[in-house]
Each structure stands twice: as structure tokens, then as C-alpha cells.
Amino acid sequence: MSGARKTVLVVDDVPDDIMILEEILKAEYRVKAVTNGEAALAIARSDSPPDLILLDIMMPGMDGFEVCRHIKSDASGSAIPIVFLTAKQMSSDEKAAFAIGAADYIRKPVDPELVLARVNAHLERKGELVHASEIRYRRLFEASVDGVMIVDIEAGRVIDANPSMARLLGTTQESFLGEDASSLAPLADIVNPKGRMPLLARREYVRETNVPIETFDGRCIYVEYTCNPYLSDRRETIQLTLRDITALTEAQRSRDELAARLARYLATSPTITYSLCLDGASARFVWISENVTRILGYSMDEAMAPDWWFGHIDREDRARALEGVSELSKGDSFSQEYRFIRKDGSTLWLLDEMRLIRGADGAIEIVGSLTDIDERKRAEEELQLKGLALESSLRDKSALLREVHHRVKNNMQIISSLLSLSSGEDREPGVQRMLSSVTRRIEAMAIAHAQLYNSEDLEYVDFTRYLKELALGLVRGGGAAASSATVEFECDAVRLSLEEAIPAGLIASELLSNSVRFALGDQSRPGTLRISMRMERDPAGPGGGDGVCTMELSDDGPGLPAGLDSRAGSTLGMRLVGILADQLHGEIAFDSGRRGTRGRLRFPVLGYRLSSGPPPSMPGP
Image 1: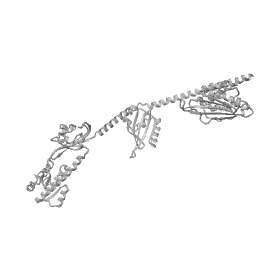
Image 2: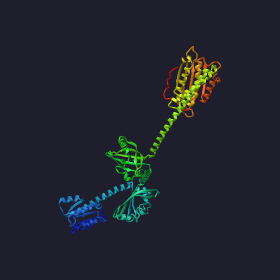
Image 3: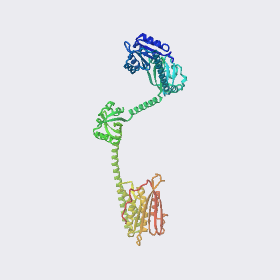
Image 4: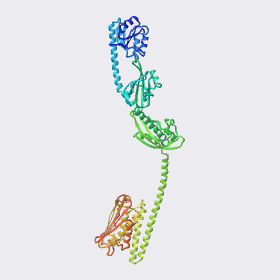
């Protein structure tokens, strides 16, 4: 092989031995020779280290073993093959030499051909290792996702760059190979000779992060870079590595902005946020938001004290607050309200909402929030007082309204009694009938007022009960024949307002009195009176939930008397029925024949109202 460019360092304290080795090697290698270990170390650690060392063991001062250990401990010298040349014949010395990193062991006197052959073999082996290492490095260099560039420090020019560097900078490898690195716009600040280059010249490692650069294709990115100086082929070079951290930088910026917004929110929020750690039977604050000072007046340090929370809960609420913490341990969340003492001595209500978090290691943490609900509690107390006052006022008004209905009912009964007395004194049949009709109508209205007086609900009349009471009263007062009649009811439980119940009740009174008078008065046979009432929802009504009430009264009598036309309104009662039906915005219809008479009233009801429960049962006549 040709070793013209390789350097062999001979280290021996015997000049004659040095001369022999120089004679053997000079035809193929450059030979350097020193006579002591210190000089050998200096050359091995210089900028131009030898390619191989022939080292004697027995030398004054630093022996060969010590020199070998020092060289092998250096990163730069560990790759230099060391061949011991010695007169020591003991196998233990040979073993010791290999143990500390020697490549070979040759005993003196030397065989020139053997020495040359072994030197050639070790240098070839070293060359193969270097070549294999270069291949591995090249593969890593080319495949690296980070951009890598090699720069000659002295010349300042780009020696090599990998594809990732070209992609990162937005250009091609060929565009900057051999160029002055400081003239490359994206890298100008990094490899500026007045900036970091002096550090690199002194072989100092340089690293920076979040460095903004503008690429050749106009992108603005953030990079993290490292500069490693090293010696390559006796040239000072640096390896510049760039990593694109734009996404990471933007994520960190977003995180920082979010943290800043959260901090501002917590500082201005009316809710204090905290974290508690349970340690046995005690709890201590791990963290609490800064607005505790604004809301409660305590500093962060004061709020972090072990007994701060419990010590400032109102004494009357402490036991309940501790029970709340115990309840939390049974589930995942719990909320409670208690009074808390501010630093200025005032008291406010707090809503404490807690959530239990169990860690994988069994640790228990409570995260929660304290919300100032003082205004709400005071409003609730004020509302409660107003509610009590309103309830008292409503009781008074209900009593007054009930008394009004009672007096109206009594007055109507008095009027009814007076009319009955007047009817008894007057012998004229027409006058008696007129007074009886008026009395009956007054009693029909009085029944409604009596029901309202006896009802808990002063707004609505139980019209089903009303209709039964009215019908049975008229039947009982209709004479012996009417009293023996059968009254059949088939009614929904319907409630009507007083404005609806009075006209509907008067219409029912007129129809029922006609049936009692003309159908049930025949003593030759017992009659039957049928009363039905149905309530149906009317989806087409104005409120979408209104109803339609249909009231039907029929008998099995001989029909209306001759000459009495219900449609023509020939009597006062019939005219009154028509007027009242119009008042209800309803329709009245009659059907009369040999099998009896039937009257049907159909009218709208605002609001779909049914009584709760079935119609009440009442005794027959």
C-alpha cells in the first residue's frame, strides 16, 4: 500500500532503536521521533496527531503504559493505533498492554519485515474503520430530519449540507455549497464572524433556541440551532444543526397567551378557584387564585396557611362545612353554602363547589371554586319576607272575597224569600209564575256564590257539582210527580270562571225548569231527566289550549206545549236563554217531539280546565 501521507510517531529513549525504526519506515511513511512520554503526549494531542504510534514501555519518567492510558482517555486519541515495542518478555506485560488498549505487542530485537507488515496492517484496518464510520455518518447525515451544514471556520465557506438543510432553508443544496456561509441571508446572524464565530474558533459549543429566520422562499420560521467545532483533516470546521421548531414555538405562544388570559380571568373573576390536598384528616391549600385578595381581603400567603379556610368559616356553619367535605368523599362532587369572615371582619355568603380527583397513585385532590353569593342570599331573604307579606295579604283578600260571596249569597236568599212571600200573597197565577221564575233564577246565581264561598279556589266554580245541585233542587221543588222522577248524570268534572258559570247556570236553570214543569209534572208516570256535560280541547282556539264545553239536558216528556217556539223566543225565558248564549259566545239548539225535549248548549272556555278527580256523587231526588 502507499503510506506516503501517513505519519508514524516513534517513542523510545534509545536513539539507536529510533534510527532502526526510521530506516524501516521512511520509505513508506513520514516518521516523527521523541525520546520521552511527555513529548509523545504533546504530539498526540496536537492539531496534527500521528496516524500510528510505536511506543517503548521502559522509559524514564512516564513509561509507555502511562502514555497509552492518557492517549486512550482522550476522545481524539482513542482512535490512534498504539503498537508496543519492548524488550520485556513476560506474558503478563503483554496482557497488560492489550488491557489498556494497545493494538499490538512486538518484542525487541525487531524483525524489520514484521514491523513493517504489522504497521501496514494496522493502518489498513484503521482506514477501513474510518471508511465504514464515514459511510455510517453519511447515511445519518443524509437521512437526518434536522438540517446539517459543515462550514470551514478559517475560510468561512460551506463544505457540505444535507437535503434537510436545503428543504428547511427553501432552496437546493447546490445553491450554497462552496459559498461564504455568512453571505447566506437566513444564516447571516448565526455564522456572523463578529458574532458567534470567535466562540467557535475557540472550540466553544454554541446553542440557541427560538431564533427567527426568513428562508429563501420567503417563509418566516423559528429554529433551534447548535454549532459544534471540531478538527477534520487538520482543518477547523463547525457542524451547524438547525431544527424547525415553528409549530412548537407557536404552540408555546398559544399556551402562554391562554395562560395569560386565564390569569386575567382568574384575577377579575367573581369566583375564587382553589386546589386542596388531603393529608390524612387535614386539608391544605396547594393553590388558590389571586382574586382571593380582592374578594376576601387576604393575601396569597395568608390564604395558603394550613388553618386559614376552617378558621374563617362562621362558627355556626363550621360543622356543616366539615360535613360537606365528608359528603364529597362519598361521591365525585358536592356543593354547599356557608358564611365566611373577610379580613375586615365583615361576613359574606360563599357557594363552595368541590370536585374530588383521585390520582393513579392513590393521592386525593380537591379542586373547587368559591363564589360570592352574598347579594343572592340577601335577595332571597328579602324575597322570603316579601313572600310572607304577600301570603298574608292574599289570605286577607281571600277572606274578604269569600265574605263578599257569602253576603251576595245571603242577599240573594233574602230576595228569594221576599219574592216567595210576595208570590204567596198574590192570587193571580200569572204573577205567581213570574215571581217563581225570578226566584228560581236568583237561587241559581246564589248557588254559584255559595260554592265560591265554600271553595278553596275563589277563581273557579266546580260546575259539575253546581249543575247537580241545581238540578236536584229544581226536581225536589217541582211537586210530587217531579220528585219521583229519575235524574241521570253523565258529566266530566268541569270548572268554569264565575263569568262563565253564571250565564251557563241560568241557561241550565231555564232548561231544567221547563223539563220539570212540562215533562215531569205528569203524575201518571215517573219521568226521566238526563244531564250530560263534556269538555273537549279546541286546538284551533286562540290559546292553543282552550276548550269547548257541551252541556245537554233532555227529558222523556211529551215535548214543548203547542204554540211555544223555542227558536222564536216567544217567552221571557227563551229570550233570556238566547241572550245568555250570545254572552257566552255559544250556540243553543233545541229538539222537541213526542219522545221528549232536548236542549244543547255549546260554548268556548278560555283555558282547558277540568276538575281534579271524577265528578262528585250526590244523592238522587
